[in-house]
Length: 245
Image (cartoon, rainbow, N blue to C red; front, side, top):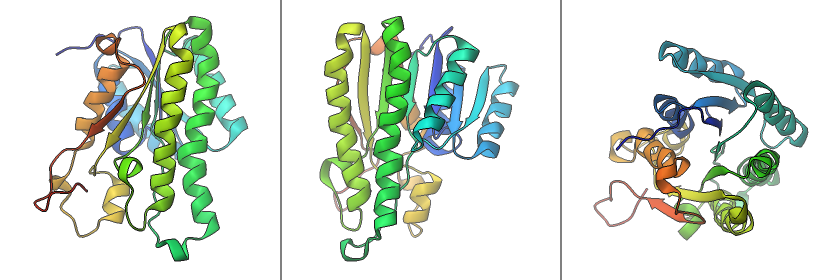
């Protein structure tokens, strides 16, 4: 199935690695111009260089999504360069696994600020442009942990659960402006973040970033124009004891 995203402009947060990078490449493959927002300027620049070899168009923007002023500047920069924003994929996230009794407040705040506050700040900034256009597609990244929770992951699970409700509320609010918002909840994905928290696991036994990116491209395209406010689980390989990573 082909998706035509020509003349579309997308923002991808956390676009330098993992699911973000895979989504950036997939969006460009289908014709979109992409702003790669990431806290790591060097890695974001490397993705842009890779896109240039594909004869695609992208810019790298260094930003901490938890920083309100930095987010507003970054979004303004994208609008200045492209004049519009059609697609937003809120992907930037961190995960710190710690037993409840020993979670440090700074770790709790880092996870919630990056994952939840960052999703809110970027969405709010981009939404101003989408409301003017009366069009747009927003995709947020949740997690199966946000639907069920798991030991040692309270901060991460709480942030992802909140993103699900945030997305549902957003979708209900902006539907009348022809703006859609959906959330994808993957199980384990072979990313740098996942490998750090699952060092003993086989990276090929879980979802690959490109498999998640395919769903995001679908939700960003007109092929999914009837889908709004949905929470979509992407489960991938099931472990032999019947659970998901």
